[in-house]
Length: 122
Image (tube, rainbow, N blue to C red):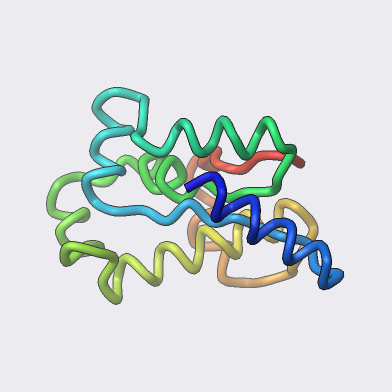
């Protein structure tokens, strides 16, 4: 997995773009973080930190919203469904706004909740 990310980052930089890796959520991953504080993608996140690569950890951001089981079922249908994708989009907008990369009104709904952590290489 790290090789794919390294190639993505390298290609983006060669094309004059600033790469941003999104760590996409799945219901099991969110639950895992809520229950244990750890996640199976932590080795990838460690690699991104080591490489000083921008990333958004949407798994931890969703877990920080402290969804109950019923909410997780609304957000995910094996993978993120329409409601889950809406939350993911809002979390991405929030993180981009915090990093000064975008100005968006869509982050306001989540801003009133505790600001979930989940991004590296500021």
